Image 1 (cartoon, rainbow, N blue to C red):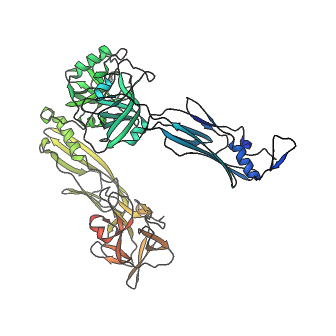
Image 2 (image 1 turned 120 degrees about the vertical axis):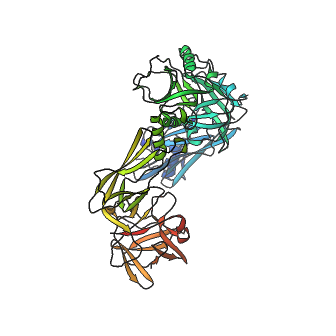
Image 3 (image 1 turned 180 degrees about the vertical axis):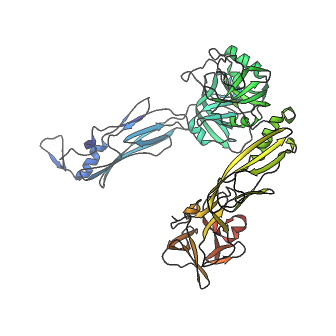
Length: 610
């Protein structure tokens, strides 16, 4: 949680040179002289101890209202004249956070809920001799601020505060919920009255959509018209909450743009207008403009009235699937610019600067009855192929399931899958609802295309596929005279085989490769009770490590005896009276050892040969 920072004090650590970390060059005296010139006292300190104490005197506490830095020209650890000097500065409280880089220490003071006693400890070590001292001070509690009822009340007070040097500071009585993000530094929160933009990169890393927050204090001002929060102090109350039912204001794009253009000079749009979630019908246009916007909301009846979607808003991509359609959208204002009334042409190349919006929510529902045949075919094809992604490179004989239906709202279009006319028909085939790839003796490339037809309109989409110059198939039994490749297919990822690599080394996760040419040769040697396995020139043995995980060791002498499992058609091994296999699970692209009890719900490795 980020607390509002107030610099109360700084620790200045300064030395003139590297030599000042310890005694002067050539100074090996172990005596100190008192104020009485006739009296000499022999010190009990060693030369190293004297050097450490001398350097420690360089730690000085000073007052400073600016950024707190403590500069020490020696790095935190240095070696000089065969002696090692180590400098440290530590804090015992989160109210004083210390960082160090290249000999420069930065102390940031944070006001917490209560007064906090802070102790800073500075130390210098010369070889084994250490000298240290502490500095203690109190950081006052964060000041109390007035709390307003809701976001609408907060934003309504932002007018007249148009600079980060002219802010208002309030807290909120009611909690807010995170509803989205802008770039890596902007957090969008909302309650039932409005939404609010907070600029804070640390907060953006710490919170997630659905987090419920208590805002203790936040500075508010208008940045290019947008009410913006900075220097926020908040507490996370809970997670996984639904987006608040924020009241919406019905409008049209033309009406809103006309109002914004009239008030754009000096960003005179009332802050309260920024607090609203607007609802309007708009034609979505995916394009690009000089200022980085790539989605427009265009008034369906007037192509000169539009709002620009700033590309950094993450939810903006949810509008792209409805490009060219008129849909109902919910959005809020981001900033206000005076736009030029230039009609958007067929190429959208005449788009000018204008007011920008922040889109809120998922992809809008589309009225199918309002679609043209062209639009229906386009969106039906996207629906058909949205989750289809065949592997680009096949190393073994592979079957790929082909999607063959779309959402019922698109009717029953004609769907056809085919390979290119020039593709090798022995390598690339379509049989029923499956595409089949059979790698041959030479490398082959093919193009898999789907055609979707509604009425007189046909849309197509193609996928490039390469079949490697190998013809490997999974084996159902062991033949000690054969050389195999060993791999696994994780269908949650791709249809590609992940092979045991030639560059395999001992460990929990042996190295893998997707290329047959880089896969290790695997051989079986019959022994009493089963088989030894040889990977390349090494034998593969197994053991349980200190974490009870399977470790694969590749060594010169065999010790593990493997068995053949006819149910899963793979080799197994026994460790501590438990049978294990080699494969993967979930969405991991690795090879590892797992108990055979998990095999039915995971991905079991197989032997492959021509």
